[in-house]
Image 1 (cartoon, rainbow, N blue to C red):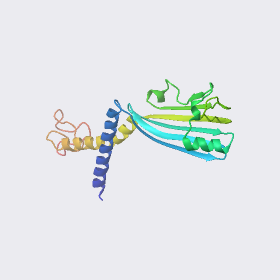
Image 2 (image 1 turned 90 degrees about the vertical axis):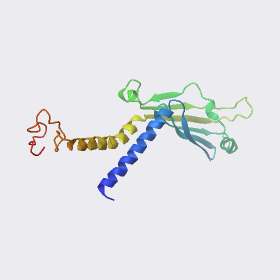
Image 3 (image 1 turned 180 degrees about the vertical axis):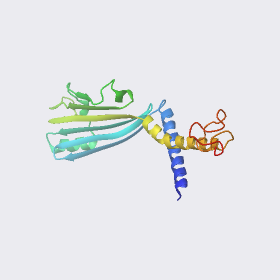
Image 4 (image 1 turned 45 degrees about the horizontal axis):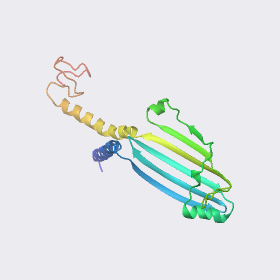
Length: 203
């Protein structure tokens, strides 16, 4: 494949991705598209549930990950949590710790980026509610990362824009009254191009 054909293919691919990102940006004003993956695993008396995913909404991509780990009185209790996907994280204590790694008002926050971590303990001990299994100890941690769509839009718009500007300049050079070397308008200086210095005989 020649270099010119490869450049054309890359330009069309970049343009297609840019159009798709613009469509997602517009769609995100009215709806949100979410993609999630849940899982559970057991190791002895310890049960772990996790949730991973991302969603597209309002011009941004939101990535999140949540992990709940609990140590239970018996392996049977841990197996029950894993089997029925119990939700021990609903019983948070009153001491969750939220850590915003991208401070509000910072340059990154103004550009649409954010990174937030939250950590909390689980309520432990026996519960008066039937069917509720509480761990002997446990923790709930999550992280949310927000990235805007505009950096990707700018990246994929660069090549098509550069090729379009180049094509425009090339077409202008072929017109009478314009310098064939740089495309500068020679109507005010027909003897020599003031931009690149080419004489009128070459221009």
